[in-house]
Every structure is written in C-alpha cells, then in structure tokens.
Image 1 (cartoon, rainbow, N blue to C red):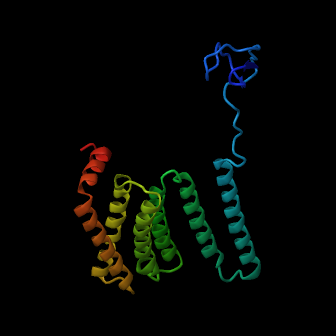
Image 2 (cartoon, one colour; image 1 turned 120 degrees about the vertical axis):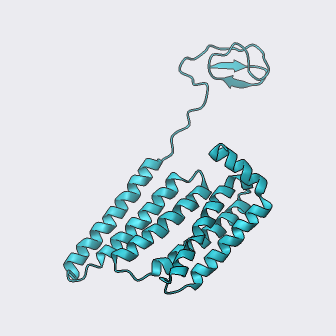
Length: 221
C-alpha cells in the first residue's frame, strides 16, 4: 500500500499523488487493496425479514386450525384467528415495503385495515362494527398521525398534503352510511366527518399554494 510521509496516512488504490496534500507517495500499489472500505451487508435483509414474518404467520394459522380440529371441531373459531393473523401479516408487510415514505405507509394501512375489517365483519356474520367503529376510527387516527409525524420529522407541507387530503376525503365517506341509516352507532362517523371537513378546510385556506404545486407535480396540470 502507498504511504504519504507528509499526511502520515496509507493511501489505497492506484494514486499518483496524495489526495490530501498532493505530495508524492512512497511504496507500491497493491492491486488487491480496495479504494473504498468494504461495508458488510446487514445481518438480516428485508427479504429474510419478510420470509420470517410470513413463516410465523403461517405457523400461527396452522397451529390454530390444528387446535381447533382437535379440541372443538364443532365451532370453527380458528377462522377468526386466521383472519386476524392474515390482516396483521398484510399490514406489517405493507409497512416494511413502504417504510421509506412513512406518510404513504399510514395511508396504505388505513385503507388495508378498514377494508380488511369490513371483509372480516362479513365473513363472521355481519354485525356492522366495521362501519360503526373501525372505518371512522382508522380515518381519524390516520389524519392525526400524519399531522403529528409531519411535526416530529419536520416534513414540509408539500410532502404530506396529498396524503392528508386523500385521508380526509376517505373520512367523509361515512356520511353515506349515516344518511342511509345502516349504522348502529353514528357518533364515531359524525366525529370522523367533522374532523375530515375541518382538515380539508384548513388545508384549502392555509396551504393553497402547496396544493397547486403538488397537483402540478403529480397530475402534470
């Protein structure tokens, strides 16, 4: 490896002069020496983590089904466990794939959890809890979470406005269920609609320039 007497450092790679002081180097160039340090890969890659989580989910489903068949074959409660584990697996996988954009992850989780809750409600015999509580709750929690995360991580408005507007529009959807009278409990939906309307009004009044910028960038207007 080459050496600089002035800077007192070893120089890797094929260098004619010291990159620090420009002086002459002593020694010979080693072809096997790397110019940049070799950074080892992470101990656990994302693909390994996904495979591990998937294996755990499959194991939990299989064990619950086996226990159900052996202990209480007359009541298929394992279907509820399988649905719950499947929902949890899906939300975790989405979070892993979307971790580079935390606000997008929140939006995806909102749609997935509320949609999975409706399907789950239908599968076990419709009770309406998915529309009464889960859907408005997901929307409200997502809106509040986005604002809090934007403040904590100092995310500029143009980076989160699109997701908050998307969440707010989705949060107004429960008005359909309120007007049609299919809800057993209307208070969560009313609160969610109110929060969504206030959120949209605040964004339109105070972030109009950023809305135009985001629209031009995303939709080429």
